[in-house]
Image (cartoon, rainbow, N blue to C red; front, side, top):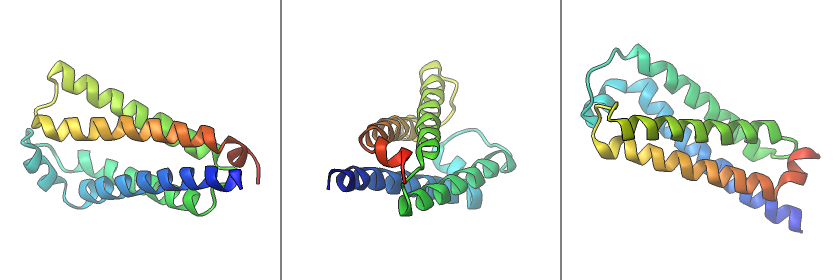
Amino acid sequence: MEQSKDASALKVVLLIFAVVCLVYGLGYLIVPGLLVEISGGSPVTHGWIRWSGGTLLALAIGAFLAYRHPARQRILVTTFTWGTLLVGLGLLYSWLTGESTSATWFIALPTVVSFVLALLLWWSGQKAKELLRSE
């Protein structure tokens, strides 16, 4: 029963992660110019943004697959945790140094979302560590 509850928390967090990656991934892959315009940032070649959209969509697919079968997915959950933490740190650095030309809300939102996701992924991974190791 306890393992089922631990798996439920992990599955919810994986689903949230997948949706966030899906939303950002579709935006960066399909309409990167619109996102740059909305952000108020400097124009950039769309190719520099589209590749990240593809990567985010691949992460979303991986998260959906792990959501369906979370057993023995420790490496994937660890990768998602580190990925969101590093993204959050990179965005925070850009925000604090004034390196970003985007509107504050456009960098603050994904910074906070990344740190929250990193924390949730770490927490749910710790709760479900036996499930993530075993079958």
